Amino acid sequence: MAIKRISSGGEFEPKLGYCRAVVAGGWVHVAGTVGHGTTAVEQCRSALEIIGKALAEAGTDFAHVARVTYMLPDRAEFPACWPMLREAFGENPPVATMIECGLITPEDRIEIEVTALLPE
Image 1 (cartoon, rainbow, N blue to C red):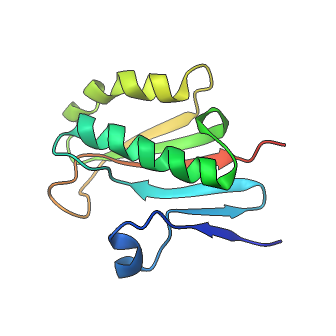
Image 2: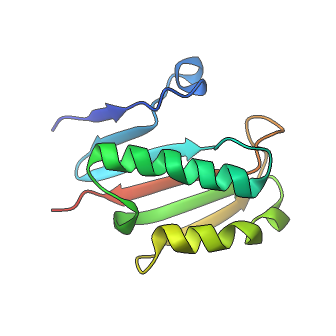
Image 3: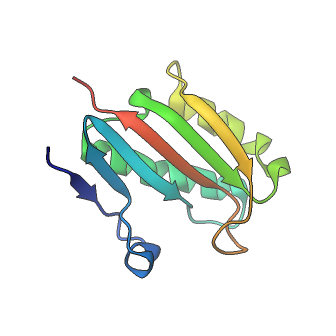
């Protein structure tokens, strides 16, 4: 079975040696994604756009996301993101985990990782 690798052109992909998403075995695994902006809300919105593009390139969408992991250095910033997350996943919410942890730079306020199923 072939593996398809999807790059978003992000600065850390070549530095760390990874790609934005991998399509394998009927699944799309999207790497942890930090968006642009200074606040958790701005970065969340941007990360969802980047993830949405990777999912589309892979042949799927947010309705087929089965698992999402949110990572934030300060969990108090998470509730402000909830409305846009509800909008992104709509009537098809995935299982979810939120982890409070350090991210790759101090400016990063939220990182989002998803796994989606390819539609049949």
